[in-house]
Length: 207
Image (tube, rainbow, N blue to C red; front, side, top):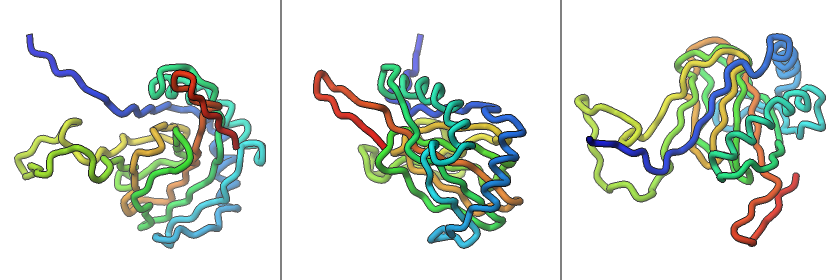
């Protein structure tokens, strides 16, 4: 019997309805008042300042819901249920025609997004393989190509509903194409473990 085994997959977690309607509305109201930092590449994208959960009562309440999920996701990444903390959280307000250029997140291990409004399909987050690596120098792509997890360069995240959260390794490149729908508001964050230990060679992280 033939068997296909997925070697070294990248984990991605979707948590449905992490936030209730009351929490969503409270954060949206706060972001619409405080978001003022215009993105360097898209004038239709703005960000709030980055804050630790302790600096914002709403963020603190939300972080208490996120931490258990970080522990679950961290178990997939590192093979042990570690202690996790959220370094920073910030809001993103994406207007019609706004976009987020390709990027990843430095100085952290798990990143996440909580969606506070519906997202038009055009603005679903796209994740992609990093440049270089150990792939073949040649590629095969045409109208006849059937894309799958072993040959695709990009993956479009599924449709989300307000309150949904996604978690992914911070090194994973991602972008948002031009938003063809209405206002899209999200809460993003970065997280670190307390420490990592490789056979006695340990390093601690703090914020």
